[in-house]
Amino acid sequence: MRQRVAITGIGIVSPLGNDIPTFRNRLLEGVSGAGPITVFPPSHLPTRIAAEVDDSTLTERTKDRKVGFAIHAARAAIQDAETMREPLAHHYEAGSSGLSIGIGLELFSMPDMIRHLKGEKPNDGEAMEFVQTPSDICVPRICKEHGLQAPPLISISACSASTDAIGTAFRMIRDERRSWMLAGGTDSMINPMGVGGFCRIQAMTQRNEDPAKASRPFDRDRDGFLLGEGAAILVLEPWNDAIARGARIYAEVAGYGTSFDAHGISEPHPEGDGAALAMQRALKDGDVSPQMISYINAHGTSTPKNDPAEAKAIRRVFGRSTDTIPVSSTKSMIGHLISAAGAMETAATILCARSGFIHPTTNLENPDPECRLNFVRESALQCEVRYFLKNSFAFGGQNSTLVIRNVLE
Image (cartoon, rainbow, N blue to C red; front, side, top):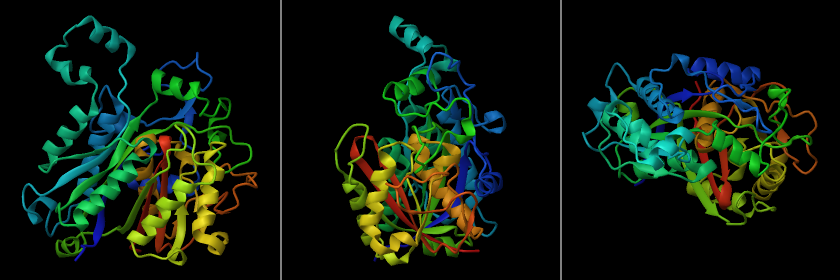
C-alpha cells in the first residue's frame, strides 16, 4: 500500500516577502519584485536588474545568501507545521526524518578565490563560509537543528532541482522509507559570476530602465528571463499521521514525473518532447487524468525558445482541454529562482488556491501567437483549483512535473 503524502508546512524567503501572508497577497495583487541590482555593482554588465530578497528581517544572514535563505525557510516551515496537539518531533520515531533539497551552483567570490589559490587559511570564525559549499554548510546545519538523521538527498538539476527535491521526498514518504521530510530548494545567483554567465549566453532580459516590466512570460515582446533569488521549504508527511497529530493540511502531492531529452545545454527541445513526457508521467503516477487538472503553473521563463516549447508540450498532453485550463507563470513577478524556482512556485500556487484564486501572469500584454494557452492575465482569477500541474524544465533537457491536489479551506 502506498501512503498518501500531505504538505503541512511552508516556509519562504522571496523577492515579494518572507512570510506567507505578504507573499500571497503580493502575488494576487500582481506586484513585481524586480529592481536594480544592489548586492554588487553591475554597471559593467548588459543586465543590471534582478528580483532580490530583502534579508534584513531574516533569522539567519550568511555570506553565501542561499545558505541563510534555506536556514530561515526551514525554520519557518517547521514552525508552520507544528500543532498544539502534537509537534512533529513528538509524533515520529527519532532518526526516521530527512531533508531533500535543491541547491544551486557553487561560486566563489573573486577575493575568496584569490585567497584560496594562494593557500591562505581562514580563521575559525570564517572557516565554513570560506569553503562556500552549501552542501557542506546548509544541509548539515538544517539537519542538525531539526534532528533530521536520515541521509540527506541533494538535487542539482538546475532549474528543476527543487521540483525534483519535492518529488524525491514524496516518493520516499509514499514508499515508507522516511517518516516526514523537509523538501524544497534555495538559490542566489545574483553575483558577478552568476549574472555575468547568464549575460554571456544571452539568456536574460536587458530591460534595465523598467524592471517591473522586464519579465514577460509568453509575451511576444519578451527578451529573456529576470534572475531572482530565495528559498522555499515544505514539510511533507504521511496523510494519516498528519491527521492524527492535528496538522493543517495545505495540499497532497499526488504524482511526480521526470524525463531527460538532452536536446541542448541551454535550450529545450523545440517541440517540447521531454516536457510532454514529464507531464504524462506525473499524471500517470498520480492516477490523475488530464481532464482533472484545473490549473497549470507553467515553467514560463520569458525566454524566446522556452515559452513556445512549453506551450506545444501542454497542448500535446491536454488536447482540447488546453483551451479551458488556466495557465500562469509566477516568474513574471519574482523572476527565475533557478534551483529554488519549482518549490517557490509550488508554494505560490498552493497559497493562492487556498484563497480561491489563481495569480496572474503580469506583463502579458501581447500574447505570442506561438504560445496559444488560456492565460490568466492582468489580474487574479477567482477559481476553485482541485488539482494543479507544476512544470520545471532545466538546462540540459532535465524536465520535472508535480501533480498537486489542493485541500481547500
